Length: 113
Image (tube, rainbow, N blue to C red; front, side, top):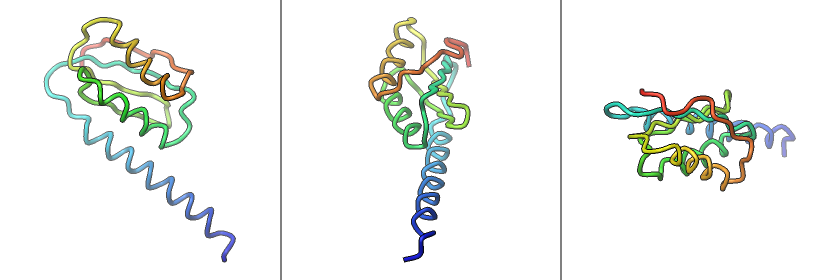
């Protein structure tokens, strides 16, 4: 077996996963009407699988209209249908913490989109 085959397969798999995250992020991006955008930085997000897990956890929230995760900037942009209270943002941060990420900071929250 060629010793370069396994690293090549791993790199190809990571590339395909990153493209999938990019595609899924763009598919949910178009939110209707006005809403609010919350930007979080998840500093311990390391790979495209992490980004996909975070996105999938957040889109389940009924107040979230879309989520875009950038692995390169480690930013999670969350578009909310409406911002009922600051507790909603804390709930979203809690959902990310439940996945095992602890280095989370708010970049901006509650701005109109």
